[in-house]
Image (cartoon, rainbow, N blue to C red; front, top):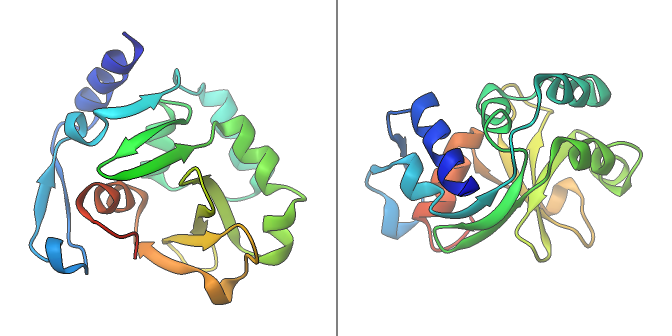
Length: 168
């Protein structure tokens, strides 16, 4: 099964569980979540090639954060639940398509969107800061004034989705 193979590769690549500290009341304490548990209900696509990841970075003129690029080497996007939250991660091909010459680039300069909640919220990197934190913004009326910072890194974003009831 493809999902099992992706989980096996993620476990090999990053065997230690990640830690997250959420601002939400139910997860103020540090929690440890294994990669297997984190991706148990997520269906990842086959890995992205190193060449496609390089093309993505060149096309965006933005170096993808290491934790996100590592995930692409194990799954080229996908969708499913991370905890109680639905997550759609775009493939590198879709990532380039959706971030060049589109509404996102014009309405919120510096926001590089990598996916969504499958509904009205987009998830992206705030490239105005280094390293770029993860933000959530509504598709309708997307601009910086309505974006919220969710996590300082992609890995912690995934952990936050898993551990929290609310996005922000």
